[in-house]
Image 1 (cartoon, rainbow, N blue to C red):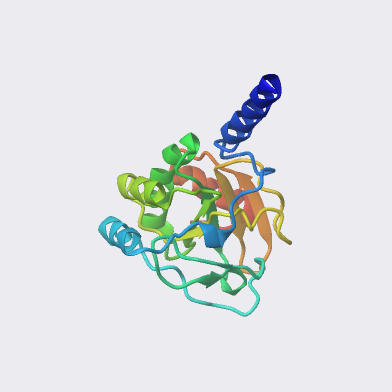
Image 2 (image 1 turned 90 degrees about the horizontal axis):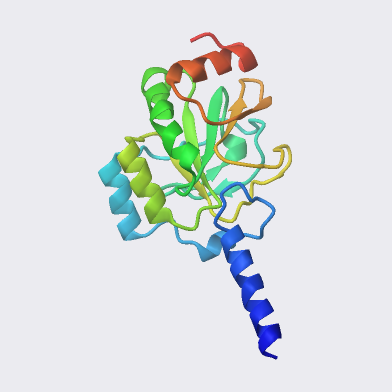
Length: 202
């Protein structure tokens, strides 16, 4: 019995350890309802960071899946299908090292070109909203942030499977999607990627 119990404990530790890796999208994540992303404390953190309100509906069919996500730190929910391109979606999580390095570059791009190509972050498969909001504050991020703690967008048609973070998704004005691996180092890198993939000159 003791040996069987030891095996079970080892398996449990393995499952918990595997769940810590942001890119492990094959694991079952908690449902959205189990992770609160809108509390008075989170609203205060969001306000302190100066994070902008989540975007309002701009179209009836923008090319993204018809999935409603909550705004990280409170605010209006967003049906992704109502977002209009050109648009950049950045999938990230507080525990993702490359995401941390990339966020200042995304903010720089937002400040320079956000009126032409808006940036929207998606805190993905992240069960620590407070840590996510604190990272956004430390990184100077002010672009809107959605939350998908349950990983509901993974492989949701027409989106492909999300195999790792950070993860960039470009939506053009015609509703066409382009996936680009994340890890950009500067706003200029992102400008070049938009030119190569969407033909947008900034």
